[in-house]
Image (cartoon, rainbow, N blue to C red; front, side, top):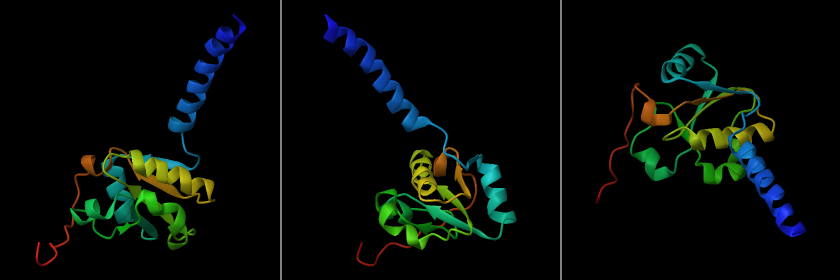
Length: 135
């Protein structure tokens, strides 16, 4: 009887902790609409635009001027991101860019913004890389 009581208390508590950790706001992160993101790209000259999608996604189309460090490689490649500049992050839908912001925030980055809705919501220009010869 006591073990079922503990399960009934512990499970909701663990689920709540998981949900909070997954969806909690990221300290210092600005969530920008597509128009605000475009304004930030034009107005704030000292920004670092970072696409956190995988390389094959990046080759299919990206915001002009973006660098590509996939979320899966971010922990090993943080030294490539300038700490003194604002980092504008995006991905396909906004989920990976928020996760990237969480990682960066934990490592001391404080000037972070991401594109709400990701590239799927973006209305601005897109650059596509030419196909590799032989494809």
